[in-house]
Amino acid sequence: MANQHRHKQRVIRGIPDDLVERFDAAARAAGSDRSSLTRVLWEQWLGTPDVEVPPRPADHAPPTEG
Image 1 (tube, rainbow, N blue to C red):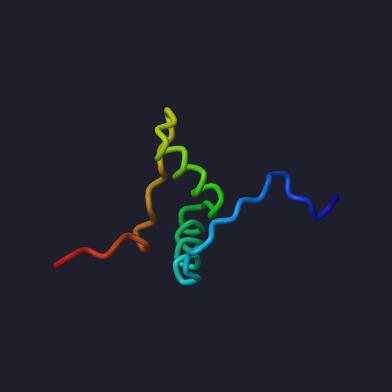
Image 2: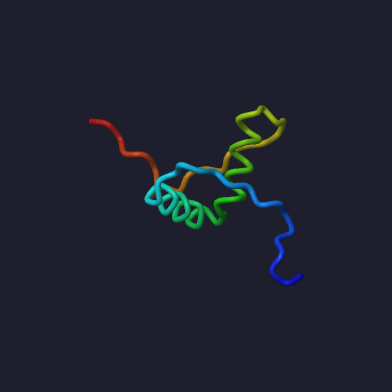
């Protein structure tokens, strides 16, 4: 089938649209995408060996306090 995804689709609910848009922009700036980064975050959080979260793009770093 032409429109069938290779992987089973997972849905995460309750994420505000503005957060999704900012995350997608940061993912693109890092040369990645939401799905790839989400998987890496899950694996890193669970302690999968040799998994590292890629660095955050500088223009999407959290604001500094002060």
